[in-house]
Image 1: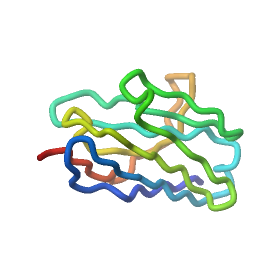
Image 2: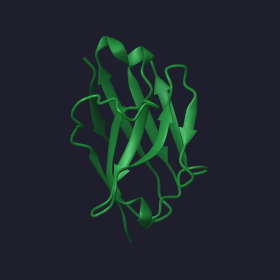
Image 3: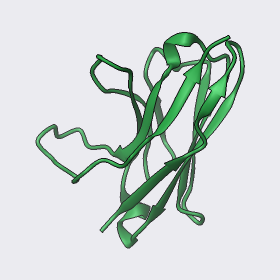
Length: 119
């Protein structure tokens, strides 16, 4: 069973940077694509970035050029380095397994970590 715990959120000014970390446990991590998602109040949850077991990344248009997703299979972590942050990035951020098959349910989501971008 795969367990994921997010950390690293906080309050940052526009243009600032923040690094989120997703710590995993369980033997299935090494062959599972992990995504970083976010959800703002009143809005639908969206995928920000994902990274495969071979560290092949994908970024949403909103993240390209600003965010970097990094996987460390030895440490079992998936970090999200966020630069040039905007108020629109304010949301609760989650890490969760990703699959191209929408019908797959990987179980409950974690608590997430709050990111607030404000001056």
